[in-house]
Image (cartoon, rainbow, N blue to C red; front, side, top):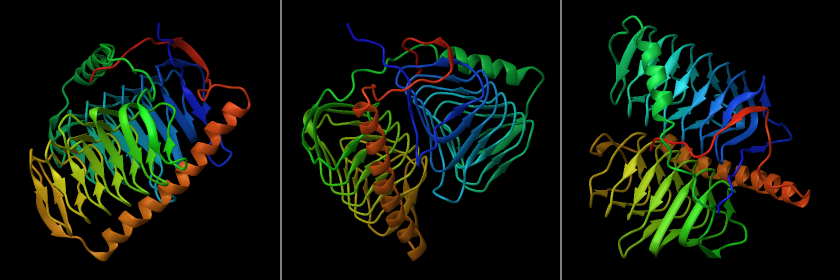
Length: 368
């Protein structure tokens, strides 16, 4: 019988996460990491991640973070600040932005760097709030890019909050951690303890698989070349004979879906994007956050692609190319820090899953 895996609480740079009071729920394999301050009565559903490494995360009271959802920052530039009574659905990402009070963020939505969500806003599922964009209070917004559709009506926000929370109780389960063939992983590779790997993984030097990722190679192989990083809550599936290949110095963002595809060197696959079966991403490509490729699509080198389906948007300039390279360096550093933190827990005789103030502990819960 599989035992339930408790929350993972880890420091970063010597700083532990801080809870303002007992959490109402910490689901299976939740990860709360680094310089995070979380208010009272939090509900963190299974496989959700709050990672405050390169900057801080500040979360208010009565926060609900759905299963496989992620909160993160921009290294030494932007924190993530979240107000009171914020509800986030499943497989969403709140990234280096400011979210006001009484906000409901739907399943699969992404809030990007520097965005500001004012009080009393509902964001529809799969919407993408672009970097630096402001959503005014009292609105329902949707789309890519997310735009205000109409004012909220009386009682609507509470109904949406209740529905998101109820839907997130349906359950998918966390699965068993790293049950696959890791013999092809270099000793320098960081595989987070809340990640799951099934099947064969070949991972070259200094590559990394982050918290709550889920890899399933089937009877094929998932290949990571050196210095590549696959960020939190990304799902990778290999069903075709080609498997999945991720190139050197490449970043796969948070909450991405990869299926039977090939990603080249020095590429960046943006947060919340989907790369469909047979897609080939050439070297030096940036796929924008929230983009979806078409099966068998080829993304030409040297360009930024975005949209649903993905289309060529602009040639990559020196600034974007430098950002891709810098992200890789940051993740090499992060990986070393977290690998050391997990090893220190094991050496101290503890499981690499810590504890936090907690009221109710969940069983399996998710709504993917």
